[in-house]
Length: 74
Image 1 (cartoon, rainbow, N blue to C red):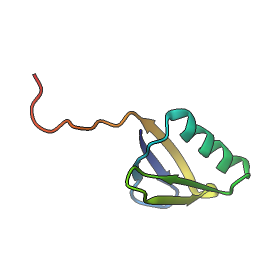
Image 2 (image 1 turned 90 degrees about the vertical axis):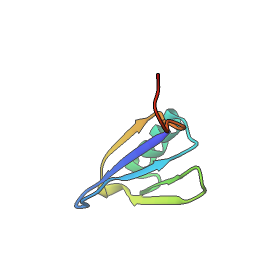
Image 3 (image 1 turned 135 degrees about the vertical axis):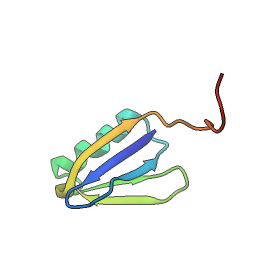
């Protein structure tokens, strides 16, 4: 899944490609916002980790990742 994270007072959004499904990302976001974790922590497909303080989250957009779309389609 491709996840775009908007951070308050940041000019660009964070974009990661994670192995979690949409429900897993939603659970991680709701846990962060409920105060259980205090931070949103997601790992991408290459093992890198993104950690954002929950109070700085502006939005989280979840979309299916589009892999292998190089070149022309017919």
